[in-house]
Image 1 (cartoon, rainbow, N blue to C red):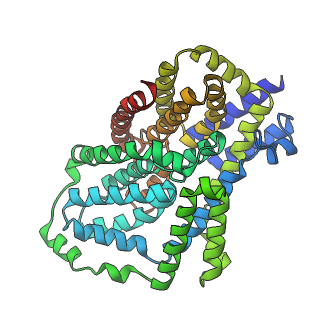
Image 2 (image 1 turned 60 degrees about the vertical axis):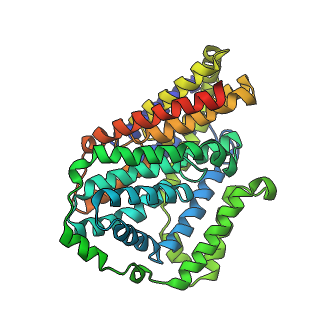
Image 3 (image 1 turned 45 degrees about the vertical axis):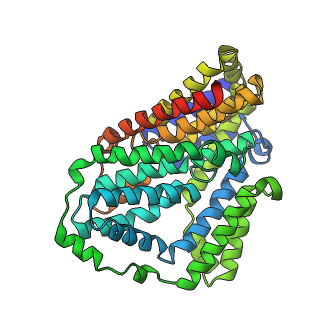
Length: 427
């Protein structure tokens, strides 16, 4: 009986998150609270268990990276990059979009995609205004580029963090297995932008001359803080890569980096913590409690056993079903709760099939969820953030205004990922 109640609570909260009838943080916390009230879980399993509780590695990794990026934001380096890109493009709209796409995708591989679009999107308004360009296509392209670029690394997209924590994958694992494909996907997306957003590419020679007169170096507000931030960020990234040697979890590295950066600079603790996206962290906590309750009551185990029975002896079909199924479901609901729900199921499938054959299932889940998030306006957190920024700046982007481009991008990128998984892991 408790298992059925837990499943009903989870589906109810999931529906509220997907439809946005209630703020997703309220839905996640409310669902977590009800799970505790109906005894689907308890304080011990919810807060202290590795298998059924809050994944503190995910929470603290995001917290540390948010603090580092919050300090970096104060230097003006992102404004510098945007103006530099506009000048490099010589005011040509398509060239500008390609550069912004490449910058956004690259930054999203190092930072998380939500933070990247938060920093790059406001600057896009400035550049598009100076060039008299419609800003919506550029914002949409940046959101999609952030989701594609974030697929390449452990820290690039929140679903990857969840997968890495559940599967025991390292920063290097994501670089080796997903980064080569992501380079191809970013190049394909840049070419696709030429077709999708062709009506936005209106070149104005006079406006281009004005942008060429800007000095991007003036955007750097604090050079000393910039160097301090880049050194710390470089050390943090190096520690991620050297995880097999150092054996420090990414969450510990991120927190150490954030602490060192705040201690070495003149940024106060209050200023650093003010840049943290606390609603996102709280949402994760509530979500983990709900999913943990499903594990605790045996719901996830039953689903996993059924899925393992259907997949037995059919690794290729299971991989393709997981890739395209994840892409389709992530288009309907945010890919974060989807991956949090699916990761314990995939874990059991991997254990049932063996490490060699099963490892591809993790990459299918990551690619499907990350790339599928581009399909609709609610598919990924970065999409929601961009649409919110656009609305606050008086240029609203409708659900369909985003989705009509996103569906095309999702189908093309997942179609490219299909032969990659097939040729590299299944043959």
